[in-house]
Image (cartoon, rainbow, N blue to C red; front, side):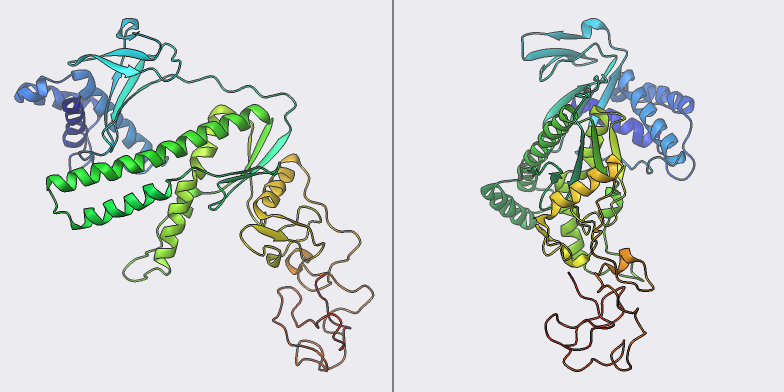
Length: 426
């Protein structure tokens, strides 16, 4: 099967992607493939179905690129994205040997056994792949049936994060299982050994394989968590609300260019790894597959700064990563759960309630940007005594940093001083 992977890679790379000009069409590529099979015996010994499907995949990739739906296809290299596709299979090409073992007929190879991990309906094609850890997989092209809605499951909001992978509006906090401490220490030792190994040596190949197996173990755990979580959400709730996050843009590198180098590159790289390890994008993709039409994407602006109990919006309410304490009403809850409830309320068609008993500060800016409670019956900003407005601090008043929206200092409550133009946090 490695030979078939190499032939498939050669077909799509050498014939399909010639450098120095536009790529030929699919018919011209098939003609070139026929000439190449006649000229090279090792190429003619391979399956023509595998080679033609490689050319068809390359043609589809270029069509997607010119249609501006995907990026430009890259050159295929050995050891990365190895695999081939078989189409027009017959009913007898796949058979079951026992409850957990099946066999599939591969052209030029014969019958190959695989582990029957899940029920598979009648398929017309399948793809054989080999990952970086050396494991072979066979995937049959079958579209599974979506999970039916519960009927009275309600609406749930899902807030995705790095420290907490997914927080639900019901109060549940879910995290992706990562590598254990012993596995992380072993991975660090292997990476140090890889840095000392000579390029092209057998020792370097063995170390890379060991690292790939550890990485594959982490990836398998993340995929398993995503599948179980998405299935559970699709079965329990009628509507699932998530934030409309552009994960690909959020995880881009901050290195910049030679002319304009980026800042905090190492910190941004660590954040990118955390986002990718949390499985943000894959969770939403699998939810859309299992619950089509029941996923609502909400604008993520200010979901983590708005109090779900009173509707007050302030950056200072987010005291830490895990704690949210409203500066207006004192409501205290997990920060991720509070954001998930705001997402749920937005999807349900109603925003968090605004406090009716405390009027907003009357400034030139909007009340949402101000976010401060005002003393009733007092004049607006700029209509008080000289010297106690936006200039120097008044007598008995402690200087505090300016607040966006209020435009001046606020006295400490209970410290005295002029308060005709002041507002403080309730």
